[in-house]
Length: 216
Image 1 (cartoon, rainbow, N blue to C red):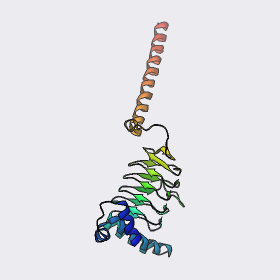
Image 2: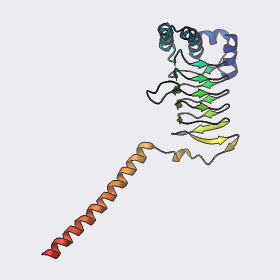
Image 3: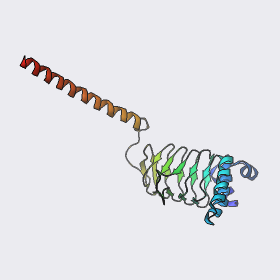
């Protein structure tokens, strides 16, 4: 518990005193509640574990499934809206911000949530979905949607998430004003198909009209 509190002081310059941290930091409360729930979960007392996790969710706005495995010096900053799935595994020195989801992609069974390496930072609103690994020392940008493996020492941004830096070297060029909008892309594709159909229909109409005139 002392290490948990010290971790907050190391990561949050707004933390002023132990009293303030212990009584007002929802991320700390959610972590401590998870440890109790996880103990019951490992003993196969699943209902009690879920009751504890749901009570913690109600009080903190942070949902951590009791089956999730969380390492040391874990810190959730602000915390509201964080969701961590059942088979998620989180390493040491991991920092999460509000709105982060570590979830699955469907109804598959077994390992279906991500494995987060050591010293990883996942920024506000990011979604990491699926059973893959986010490597050590990686950074996930705000509101990114990560659907595939992230190598160690990487920075990922965008929807879907793309690696823009690896081992300190920039990969490609990120232009925030040109990030893909999947809805807009789909509308453009549909419009292109409509235009092509109009051209084909016009050609067919012209061919049929010509054939009628020829017969007459």
